[in-house]
Length: 457
Image 1 (cartoon, rainbow, N blue to C red):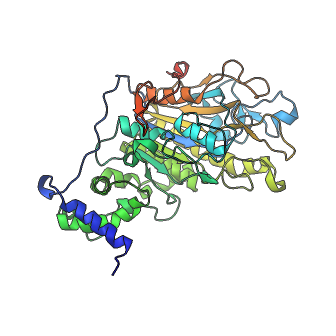
Image 2: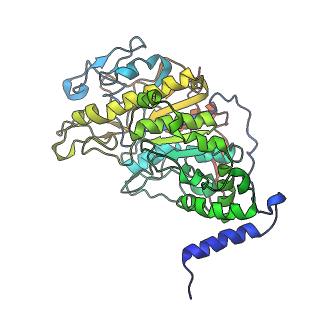
Image 3: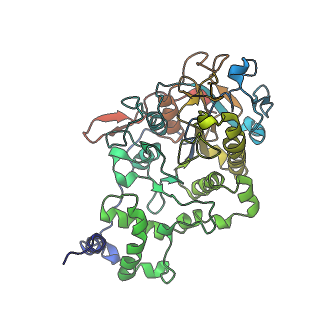
């Protein structure tokens, strides 16, 4: 009689715990590798919140407006003044206008990846993909996500995840690369949360003890076996490699109250939750604040599961398909979500004294064409676009770089994504020249560029 795969897996779990010994539990629980020796750099950012704007927001219709350009370029939106004199933003970002004195804008980002998956991989890893093609597949020879590199080089202590990603896995036809650890190994994958933090009763089942098992009882070997059998169902969905590593991760997180409490949004007042917006993106940004407050070092928040573009939902890919014009979609969906959640996050961190030690990165995979197309919209444009940074030791009320008068090209030198990566690692106290090795043993520096020191406070 054949046993079901689930029974085999459960047997393997239990067998792994029965082999070897460690402490009073008599369990095999190998520890993650200790952080590698690194060059000593000042740690300006203890944590990073990477707000990835999947689909590619238009720089000209948000933070790099061109009011003096022809109407075929400047579009329908008007600029408004902000808390930073001389720096206008889109009229549909009135709350952002009030916090521009707290951020740095980086204009003139440039690369040559015109497809979402290849450009998305570039943005999420800081590493140029091997080719520019929408068919770029998520394979183990591609570079890992920022957070996975951090988890490899400077992991958190046991029980506290280094890297969390939510609330989606993003894709465009196929899974977009650089959302996980790739060749670093699955033990450095993010804790991936795909439940909606805006749903009533939001929680993370993988981090919840059964009602009849306390933390004290969990220390008994039998209760641990039974409890972990339940909890690992969730962790296995992330394809975590190594039964002993899964147990180690699950056990440590189950016993860490700070981890479980960080995901409990019910601890926030209605006023705070309303301030972020009662929607998936707003509550995801609030969850990110709670995670870095608990000590998580890197948090990916994805604006949308899909690139969007066809109606008032999804990401920033507003081509204007199906006779749907870009401007109504931006005005009713992407811009209101951004204008509520992003300034709420900036102000909340600042009021709690956390902004100076938390780096916020707001960016997409590319921008949009300066010239409006026949569908009253804009197409992909990686030749020049904008990122917004706040906190984490970067200057407040600063503009770095510039685009030309039409927003088509950098005014002077282009800013490369490798430089953004180097800046992120530098602010976290990690030398961007540090090398990691791929599956063949070849060394690669974690960043392909030098830090943007002109933005450092």
